[in-house]
Image (cartoon, rainbow, N blue to C red; front, side, top):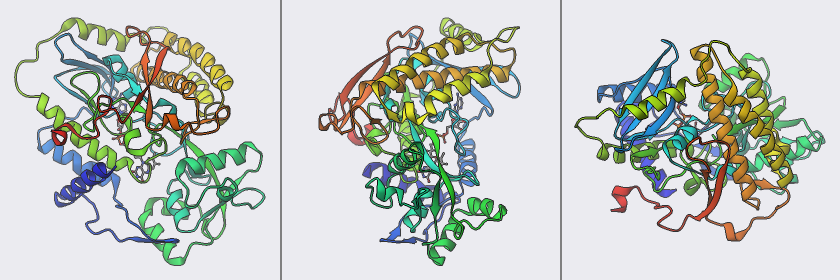
Length: 476
Ligand SMILES: Cc1cc2nc3c(=O)[nH]c(=O)nc-3n(C[C@H](O)[C@H](O)[C@H](O)COP(=O)(O)OP(=O)(O)OC[C@H]3O[C@@H](n4cnc5c(N)ncnc54)[C@H](O)[C@@H]3O)c2cc1C
């Protein structure tokens, strides 16, 4: 964690000096119980724009509105990536010596803002190239969101003195024995437990927040504050209901398994960064959201880029036609003159299994087995679905990726017989100390079709052959 934070701080400082819209000396927010919450606030759109300008200036080329649908490693060690250009309606094929996969996590298009474009493609692409997944049982996360206006920032409001109350007026975090401000997964536990026990709605009482804290929050979360203002409700005086919004793996730590902090995978030349990569070595079984996720995206992307750059370099990239043809065929497979299956209905069915807290948050062996059996049937329906246009093709590929990611998640959750962080087993309610520092690894049982079966094993993270907690150049 220290390495990630230090690298992110260096990168943010460099970016600020290169003109990125970052606070050079962030004002600190006073917080009840603690003097300050040190943090960096920034305009994410402005930062993304600046990063893009810097990349273009350095010679990078962007393929906008392009969904990568297949990634294959050729016998000569190089890669083919194939994708769909959504707006032009054509295909693109990219040949590369090395690939940094940074296609984010999997939200299963859950109920939270800013994450509808991440459907587990990174996991599916990595599996297709021969990599494996880790910690997938920790991919079932919920972040508290306001019912008036889909938002975030609950933890900052809680740190300033906001309190979540159930219908009976009880402080729900105190009721469940969590100290305040609580970690995001603890907030989810308390909210979902109260709602399923019929003690909802949950209201967020912000009346204890000082005028100074409120003013600072409104300035820092300007867009959210403006959105709430437009609704004509003063949420600081008039407590409103909040809900657990499903975010999938975006706030959880599972993803493509990495061998070190540069994001190298078991596939030589394939690196992975950000939410796409397993973050358990950094955030553990809980979540880095609001704290470490952007820092991890920055640091892991930087290290992966350095490692990839060393492998890249000039020289011919011979065409391996056979692998390219396979990748193109896989991409076009769901295209047909006659559409079959309803993508919206298939997505809803998938969400019913993944988002349902009774199945996938408060887990039991029986519930997981039932969900998995339904998911296997759904997988067959998704694979059999056909579409007649490019947009439908992207949707069907997303559905396949999201279903595959869910299958890895359910099977990993069945294998981990304990309760820890985002993974809660009602039939194993305690933490198993024997599983401290141990992550699950999910590998496709059938590499060729990478179908619905995974083999789940466990590995000790402290074993240096399993995970090296350094980026390679620093380890050397
Ligand atoms: C509401 C909310 C609030 C958050 N607040 C914080 C916070 O305060 N602090 C913090 O540290 N973290 C926060 N996070 C988490 C943080 O946003 C993520 O960890 C971070 O954005 C991950 O960066 P990334 O580049 O790995 O992935 P992403 O930002 O998800 O980017 C992945 C990109 O890949 C693209 N993509 C996906 N599939 C494909 C494909 N097949 N082909 C091509 N492109 C593809 C997507 O369109 C997307 O642009 C928050 C997240 C949410 C949802």
